[in-house]
Length: 442
Image 1 (cartoon, rainbow, N blue to C red):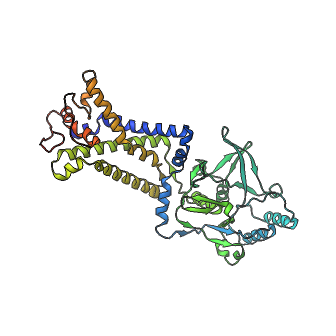
Image 2: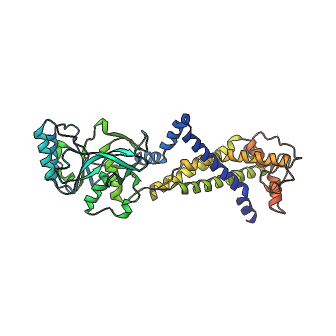
Image 3: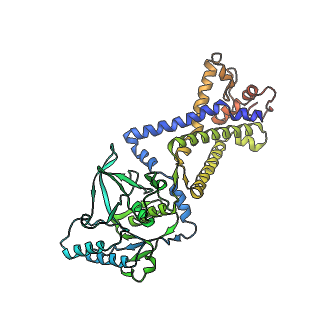
């Protein structure tokens, strides 16, 4: 047990793990600051294991139908008078809350339609939320300079919620939604947040308000869709439900999500459901990701080193083959990565915890390269400065200057195997490895 702990806690594992993390950080810094590498940086930025997780979830059982949220589709309605009539019909069914995911810009020539829309909205309950859009984002101050509102907002006392979606600054998948944003004058809330407050008839609790941005939980769910001409016939899907009113098949309002192309109305529904179900996805912060990356790098280095030593100590045909095969460590590494991916999936599905596995996979994959750099450095010191640094002799990769090179072709395994006897001699006083003509470490 003492010997195992000395191997496990050897400083070489620590140095190699730190070096692997540093290599990843340098690569990320370079890709973010050199223009011709910007496509690589964007690809890394837009990659998320959550896309794979949702693909697995949605290819399983049939999604459950929501009993809380209903979508009303008015894609085929273009006149404001017709839209006003649909709004009146929805209100007659007494929904729990109504969210209008439509912005009515300016007055149109159809004055009758304008008046009908204003009258329909004036008769809406206080639980009705209309949409607006934030414009002109100022990055230094993290505020929006202006907003686009519907023409009636000064005449009808209705609350508003912005409908901007978050796409991480790219054209990639919409994975997050926001709770609030700041304008020049005040703090404003998103449409899902305002509907949530209307549904519970209260303000946002602190547990919901923080953080401002959160991941959308695309748990397999089917939201019932009611066409504008079937509102009365399907009143049971509207009464005491939270209704989102907008377009389903409008191409301009389509967004890419982890589960495919989706209308903005449905994105708002999933965002609202995330708040209502209290099943927020907790994203592990970057400092903790760095800590986890280091820990997994350390375990990867220890597992690979132990596997090599185990194979080198055996003299059977399979072990000799494995000790000379490039595929040996690759197989171990990819098996380890598969286990880490499975653990990340379980944390996401069962515990609603998201690990950005890119920050863990990348340094784990680069452990072999970090070990190669470190072993080359140690061997160079062994040849040139053997007597100047006493700590070299305690390295797992120490090679005596007079030692002849081994004939193993695999560079990674040669470094591991050639130093195994020296390591054991330094770590323990009595334990030695068996030698034989076929043993690559003899």
